[in-house]
Length: 297
Image 1 (cartoon, helix red, strand yellow):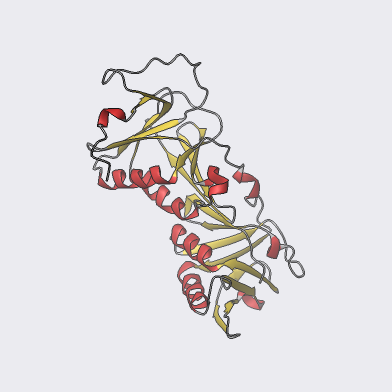
Image 2 (cartoon, helix red, strand yellow):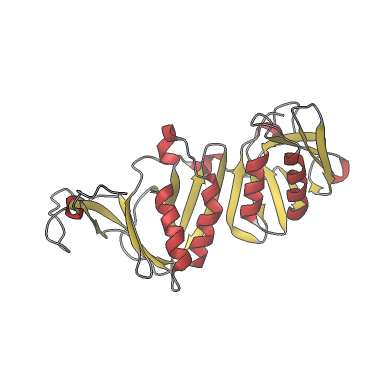
């Protein structure tokens, strides 16, 4: 609770000059945010990853990206009624602001209004903007979300989001196609055998005929393994992933089929596919994909 002797007028009033894009967001935007939230970093030293980056792709298409350096979730959303000036690069919305945006969107019947602009503070006359003598900014530094009688204004994260597309496999040289439900059950069974934070990796071994063996080794030396069927363009190799990250990516995909693709061919030991980023997609959904970095197993 706030101290009783603090007068509300002592707090700075927050103003947003909407110089940039303003658009209505609804159920599609809400679903995209929920898919990306698990991949947001909580590491304070890399503060610029503590949110979701939004970038204009062209026309009314925008790309949302979240990464913690070990996994990457990317979604594409359409904002047909977007108006205002675009900006180059990314605008990074903080994680806490996104949590409020989720609440507002979930309770708004007709969607919410998302506005990007310049952030100003002042304790002047109510409903009157403070004097802004600074040059016109080339990118927004604040965002406002307004729903059914509820709104929040927040500063954006002041930092440079990495060029995430550099790690996305461009050409699928090796692929696995598997039923999502089968892979989820296998990963869940493998994770059940893990003990402690040092035993998070699940191993996927690709055998002849496309058979996948999903396994993990526990602290007691016992191994848990499940065999499932898949379609593979190669066999005789194995890869490792963080089991929690893999499960969260599968949940975000949510389709009946998951395709795992690498821009590499199988190699010996920790090389080729085993050392390359893996792109996970749902063939029936072109608006979202995930990328997982491998783990040594």
